[in-house]
Image (cartoon, rainbow, N blue to C red):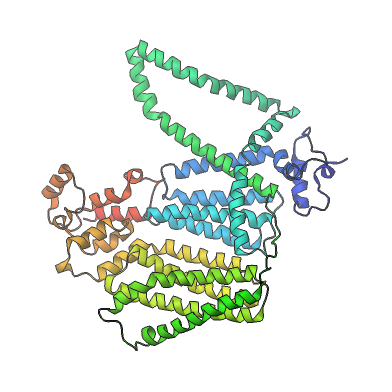
Length: 540
């Protein structure tokens, strides 16, 4: 029996011939699995037989992860880490005989753009969200590469992403099993000797700690050497943190590769359209009637400006009152339409009603945008208002896709939605919300009548991305000393050097927004937004 007969699965199309051919590179003497071995183990055979390659790839990823992101969530090495992650994914797929699909290049390109956008902003909440977005893009990449997902709907994809991560967590024992199998191979005697040497070093670590402690107590000079040299250069907490990051990166990459190859997800999408159309027609018809009346009032009173508001209401208060309710109803409409398409049997009349609801939802979104713009024109932009406007614009682009799938069930709604959401999110990251809000707020300020609350919002309420907008006001130390936490030393220095000089307080502003990791910014943790603040400090 030749090798391929041992790992080929009769009638199983999920393992391509190239992936099976890659097992020919395994060292001679590696144990092959019999044909009656469980399906999961046979699928994982290419990974096991090429353990040295995938372990080396995972270790390289862990080292790059620790180097790029150790106490550095938004530095210039972030794009380097993202590029390395993309390269590792591509190399793993090619080794397993999975050439990069056309749609996967969009995911990889978006991830790299997201990584570049991360080091351009000092919005720490947005940077944290970028990490989550990259994890989701990575999951979609893995699923898209190893499954035929063209017919998957949104619900199927979301559940698959969650199950994919859970199954990847369940692969934690595999690196140890594959390592054990690798070390048992006859030609790996040198590897076993190196492993024995490494085991000796690891066993010596606790002994070194104990002996160093005893010798430090025995000699004051030696104790000073240990304290000043070893502890300053090799802090145990730092070493443990870095080692943890390396191990986390290694196991994350290796387990994700194993999960992709094991293919634990069910590829088919079950047809769940068993609901009675008549009940859905009655339900959606009643809702459509109410929506039609509501939308007519919106067009007549809000868009055309006719009709009269209740006594005591201004247009800004009227807009503020109904905005969030409209946003919730519009989102709920999309959910109801998608649920009807998934669980109710096809009906042409129902499709007409769902299309009308989509049209009413478009009017509601327009009303919500109009109301928010009225409110912003009076009270200016904030983070919440900007994010809400961004979300409304994204829903407005997604809505035609939902309407299209009503009449064309084969329309790839998930891919369309993924593209729209990714593009909008990249626009948000690259647009730097703090900068947009800062310039909007400054444009409405009168330099002569600026208040302490205005200064407090600009300096404490926004991120360092707003620094250029704040600098344009030429605020003096006297105007901001009640807002920024100056120490007595800072206050004396500023008072003696430049009491009334514009922007003399930017060093304290930098300390407020940079955090401990970026107080001393170097090559590895260089951030463009914080560098802009430093430039404003040096321009005083």
